Image 1 (cartoon, rainbow, N blue to C red):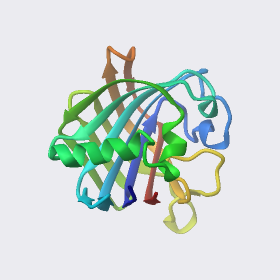
Image 2: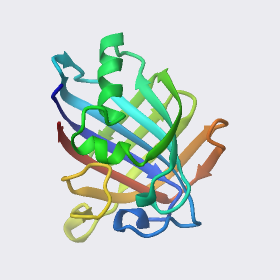
Image 3: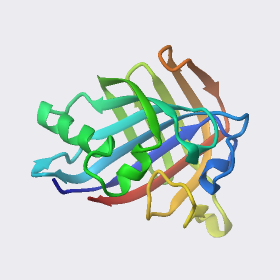
Amino acid sequence: MAYRLEGQLLEVCTCKAICPCWIGDDPDGGTCDGTLAWHINKGDVGGTDVSGLTFGMLAHIPGNVLKGNWRALAFVDERASPAQEDALLSVFTGKLGGPVADLAQLVGEVVGVERVKIQFDVQEGSGRLRIGDKVEADLECARGPGSRPTVMSDTIFSTIPGSPAYIGRAPRYWAKSDALGINVDLQGYNSVQGSFVFEG
């Protein structure tokens, strides 16, 4: 089954900016609790239209990001139909191969899948992410000369393989999951934004 997804990423975590995971180093503090959300502006999975939906993940990364063994809680947009939910899970669990499968193979355990309301907004380099009652995050892009966004490219690890990532800081990152042992309430830590095109 083929898929093509185009959209945007919001990511926050407990590493300081800039997150060392993106260059393959160990996370700050030895472990990382991160939230990722991919909003699909336009997408098709084996003939199922998934445009306008968001898929998210709250993950505990126990060490170096490339060594895997992540424990994750997955979130499916509550607006998804059963067919759309199946399509999204098929892609983001790696069953359909492609660039998303490289990321999915790092997850050692999925502790649950929840259908929740997801708020995903990006405007002029600032983002806002709300995932049910589990995650609240605000993101701001770092700026360089001429107020241009600060960008990472060709990193050894990426949550948007093949695309540049805009790095910044999160004025707010709150996340809670008893199943993952996560209880986070931070300001000024790592955030990443970007666009993606996934094909498999």
